[in-house]
Image (cartoon, rainbow, N blue to C red; front, top):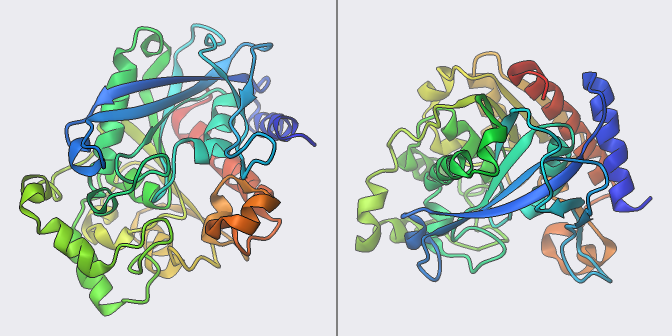
Length: 360
């Protein structure tokens, strides 16, 4: 079955689960906003923050492939969306802010975001400066992860003020979701307090934990990370690591294989007020559940947790093609279970957001 038909079938199934009338087509728009801290993280010291918005569009719009890689031999099967399509109607719809993983992109997680949009949500995603796969990665972008929720805050303000998008947003119904480091972002956006010293202390005593090791996407050692944070040019921003990074509009949190949980104060997790749902795999060496998502689920009152058997970290990326499995290290060894993993995550997320934010 072609990728677009698979996605439409999945969206239709999700719509039936939630009682929605039908799955919509998807539109895609791109914005940029000014984020001053981006200059510290971006390799070219740019202050621009790239924003992608996915939303329900009318049937019959010209949806185009979002797959990553050469058109004749794609590496990742992402889905489809119609550039600059009109919104399907004038209703205000719930908003989901989305944060990609370490070294990822908004588009890489399009399998998740476009399907939520197909089911009626407006999804607002960013490419985190200095920590995305479309640009050169940097050490500040890798380690200054407390700026990630601030990126989402800037993105929300930008879409709110955009004359073509703002009137379609119901800002009384805002959720946040993220994968891996994006799961950390989502929790911080809901009020979890960042404690960078706690993270380094954990890694000194648990150097073999997956979040403490140099990552495949950008192999920064713990020592180099500490050296980066100690540089004079970053001192003013590092002083804001412990600030409150809450996005006040957020009413619900969905975290996919969350990482860097040890950089969050346990007491702040125990007092989160927004409902939280977490999905992860039990075979994840990158963000081990017993030190990341499982810890968060145990600490957060009433948190929902779904553990997928035999699922690893990168199963949550867009579907790797055979070409990617042969040439992209993140795809090496993945089994043919990615689509099942995606279906489970989408079903849980859709039901969770409908229950917490209302039907879109």
